Image 1 (tube, rainbow, N blue to C red):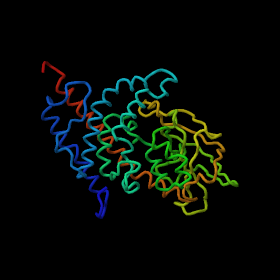
Image 2: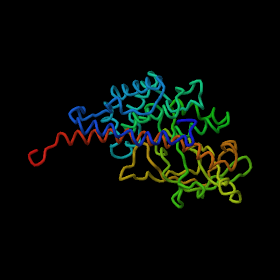
Image 3: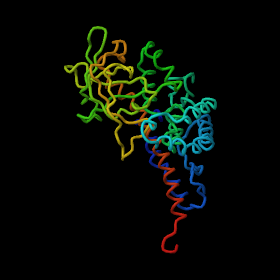
Image 4: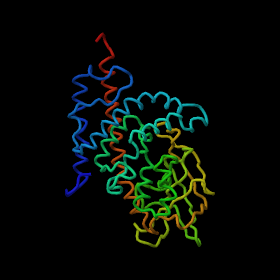
Length: 344
């Protein structure tokens, strides 16, 4: 995000609030200019982009937009149909996903989210800043599942960022190569049904040291991605020391998702949708044992890690939602320009 300002988030936030105005004016003034097909992409006027980014980031915007036009929109019907199947088949992965991921890798549109400060040489991602990536997240957001094609979807991006920022070399070697390559997916177990979990200090799950292991006990929900058959690891948040200061009671630990004692209870509904095959899940951890070496940083660092993880993720989510809102607005304007009522 913009640097060297009293509040580095303010310039970007103000930019997000004003980005929609040119599009509204363009769409409402010239509805005939909107695409005539039912598949509507994000054809913005040139003045709609207000954030200043590098020429290299602009090049990625063009490449990503072209990929969306050539591959993503055309696959929407197939992937949606797969997710709307009856029964267990809905919780499998459409063959279109790995096919599109292969194309994205070949075109260098992979792991775009990795921030430049964590990967200054661009060895893992593309060396973009968070602000530059935000413009790409907006483009991906036009299709809810599109970010997965570029290995830029939550909760994996947040979990990978945690490993990059806070993981030991052993932890990175165990999980990062598979996650960065898109061979596995992951989930993040923080929110709990019994407490207001937006305040992480309320978390009640426990992480108890027993010899060379930690024992996990807790009831989690809204654990996004836990229904995905490719989900192989989880980052679990719980309390290790109830006597510590309020913001030093929590810790985070890596949990193989096939560990004994983990029970996926059910997918939860968001406005009536279960988001198959990804899912937002209720999960119980009953006496789950993991090696002590799986702990991230040290006991008492969970709250700090949570803040470091959630910060960039909020920008990613907001930009994707702006992209989706822009497309929805175009669809609305197109419908308004075509429908007739009272003979008009």
